[in-house]
Structures are given as structure tokens and as C-alpha cells.
Length: 376
Image (cartoon, rainbow, N blue to C red):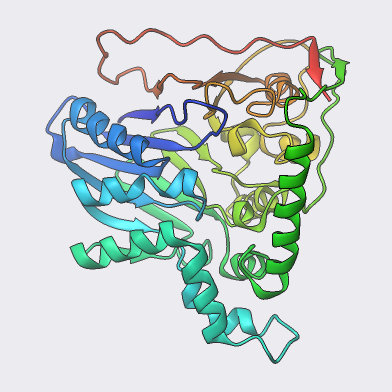
């Protein structure tokens, strides 16, 4: 079995996003023997690039499964183009408006009603609502991706996918804290106003970041607080593919709580992520708010005594995403644990099996260096 994973470049400025295509099967034989997935679609422009890419390099106008990992527009917006312009079998996406009754029970306030929650979610999450509308109109079956309903799924001989997070209960816990929810809406509004004021005050003033020194054995990355990432990001779908002995982990924008949920699910399935994963997506474009030493030790293993690499990590980050996307201390943390790190930054990245077809004009990407100085 051959496979190809394509991380398409998203964003020309500072704003990053995800647009990932994946195919596996008999890539040199009849196209009917391959399976094609799309995991997030970035912006509308990214969606258009995705359609063109799949038609040109995968030689098909069909996608077996589209996955919307979470409702942020930098992941979901481009999928509307994929759904409209390609033949799609299934759409995996959460439908938060369908959980209004369950979420209502988690609020200690009689003024909060299921209909009120549903209306709020509809107004706030227009990108994923659009995906639902397109799928319904075109007869594409929608499946809500939960680890306790999908779990392990055989795709074809030699190919298995594991849905590691979220479980339905974990998802609904995150949904309560979405920015559009009643108790959070006011706080989110105040936060947005505060950030706007701060930007005005800092207009024309470059933010000065303190520089820290690191060595291979001196790590400055620390475990972030549980609320360091948004509930929307922690609702991300985390997928693990087993393709003919190769293990690929896709994390979207998952934070430590979601990654912990995924690691716990892997343990229940008797999968040792540390020893099996060959390829990993660096969460949330390489943000230091999404990972820390503890969870990385569970997923990748502890720091190696000497430099050696037996894993590959890809970061989807905009051209001008640094210093946040990716954070240098995050890059170093992955490298310490045996993962060579590559970043899009305006260029498409390909990760493939040795027997995948060669692409004319494509050159090997260069890994990011180990940084001796990192931003605090």
C-alpha cells in the first residue's frame, strides 16, 4: 500500500490555517483502488487550491471522506468549495446545534433554554452551518465523529483509522465553553474589547519578546494551563491512521486537554503512541499554548540523549506566522523527542511512502533547525 499526505499552504500574512489531503491504496494501479480524504480546507482560496491539487495529483474528482475537525473558519471555510466542486462520500463534522438539550443540563440557569442555545450556535458558527447545508442539498451523509461511536474503522486491507478524540461527553463539556454560549458570551465580548483597546494602544509599537537560550538538554517549554487553548480548539477531531505499518497522527488545533483525551483513548486501544507514531501534525500551527513536555512525552517519548530522528512532524503555518506559528521552543521540543520538523510557510509539503509515484518538479523540503535562542 502506498500513501501520500499533502499539507497545502494556507494564508499569505500572519493568519495560519489547515488544509490537508490524504490518499492511500494502490496508487500506481486503477484509481478505484485508492481512498481519498480531506482533513480541513483552510480559507476559500485554500479550498480552491485543494480541488485543483486533488484533480491534478490524485487524478480524481472524488473524495471518500471530508473531515471538518472543528468550527474555526481557518479550517472549515475552504471545505465548502470541496463539497460543492467534488463528489464526496461522507462528511465528518460535529453539529453543535444538535446537542442543545444535553448542553442545557450543564448550565445552572433556568433562563438558558435549548432553543436559545441552538439559535446562538447557528448565528456564531456559520462556516460549519454552510457545510451542513451543502451536504444536505447534495445528499452527502454527515457523521458526527466521536471516539465512543466510531473508534476503530477498517478502511481497506492494510488501512485502519482510529478516532482518538473527542468522545461525545468530552465534546459536550467543551461545547459549554464555546464563545457563543450564554455564560461565556459576555466574557468573550469583554475580552475582544480589551484586545482591541490594547492593539490601539500598541499601534506603531513593535512588541519586544525576551529571548531565552536553549540547549539540547535545556528545555524552556512548560506545560500550559488547561484553559490555555479555546474550547473550540479542544473540540478538534484527532485521527490516527495505520497504513501498512505506518502510523500518522493528525491533531488539528487540539490543546493539552484534547491531546490527553486522545492519548488515554489510544491506551484503551492498546496503542503505544510513543513507539508507533511515524508522522505527526504539530497542533495549532506550532503554538506554545497547545503542547508541553508532559503530553509530548506521552505522545512522542522523552528527550533523547543525543540528536537522532525517527519521526516526522509537519506544521501548517502562514508565511509570516512566526514568532507564534511555529514557536521556536515548540520546534525544539519536537526535535528533542526524535521528530524532524517541517513547515509550510507559503509552500506545499508532501509526506509519502517510498512506493508513491514521483512528482515532477517537487524537491525535498528542508527541516527547521534546532534553535539556540527562542522567544519566551
